[in-house]
Length: 261
Image (cartoon, rainbow, N blue to C red; front, side, top):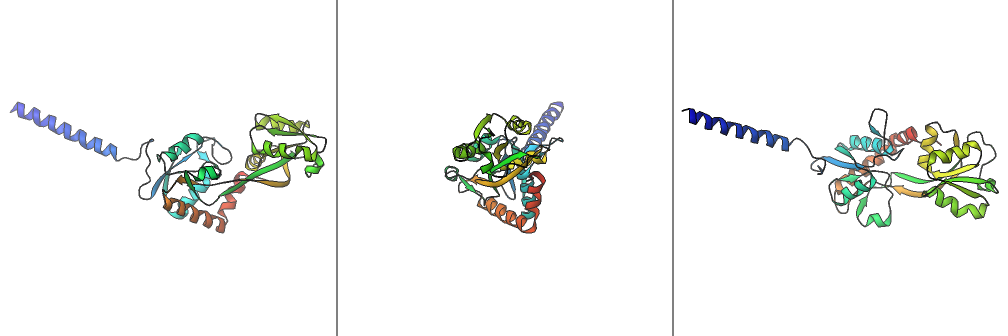
């Protein structure tokens, strides 16, 4: 009788353990797998690319991309989970179909179109020129003749400034980061700087004593991406939601939160 009781107890424990394990297996998606089944999607993003995605003081991911995604999901009635992976890791995860989509200030290029399907462009980037907020002399490229202009290496701003410096007769002073580039303009060593428009606009909203002058030069457009031939429904939802946000004014409100001219 005691032997039978012990056997029954062991069987009961094993059965209970199986039930618990089965429940754990259905408690949600893991970090290494996607959950794009039904109406919930896993969306990967960069770790920081202000003003599109970055962490605020509360440790929350915010920015243009994050706010747009939230508003579009609400408009279209789908759920999502954000995976903060870094840009290269996010793209690789999408390529291997470990996530359903990527939103990370991702430029729409012909090369990327070979691997991914993109939404309609949700942001047209470009290059802007900024001067000290107290500067009243520099209003166009013609006013740069014989002067120094600050640029950051490896950016669209640098590429554009380098392409016009001979035409307008100015010289370049290069920097590795935006902060020192801005300081060079504020100190008066350089009369202007060229920077990616959204990055420059965000810096101004954060208190940099600069102002944009002249026209913004065209750059790349950003898009929401999914794997080639996959998740057509998600792209359709994103596009419909984006259009609705533009029509009702919510899209512009989001941009104005992070970018100032």
